[in-house]
Length: 187
Figure 1: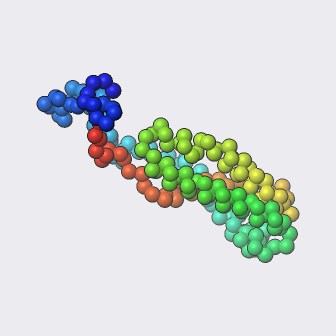
Figure 2: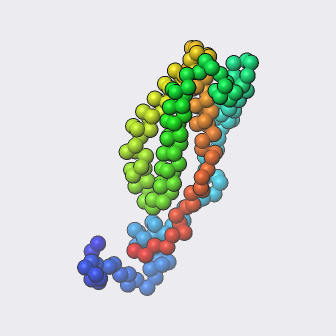
Figure 3: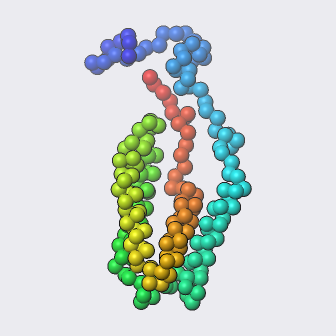
């Protein structure tokens, strides 16, 4: 910063313009004081194709969960069927739980960061390989655990359930993001 009054070892910028708040002469401060449009028209509308795709993923997952192996539903099979390998199933569930905890933690910590360029540097980007590897290992463990029931159909079954989770994940909001126009700037 150039010029100003020395305060506590540094310089503080002072504004001496009479019409500072309303003139718009200072381009730097005028740019940050403009309000951003937050109307519903500025948000992206979903097309009917995207809605249809999401519905198909959810309907397929509901079909898989409801019909299971044609004799009982998937939830009953997971808890009571003797053909399932239990240790890989439990390890896969632990991996999915760790991924869910990480996503919850990163979404909460990103909400507390003020600067846009610092948002994803702190948590998500540095741990992205770990989360990806954990998800891949969980998918392989689930495939190994459920292979005795559905054999080669296990892979599309798990992928369909994964995509249904990805479709519903954006609608599970932990907290709403609010625009930062309300913040009073003091620089």
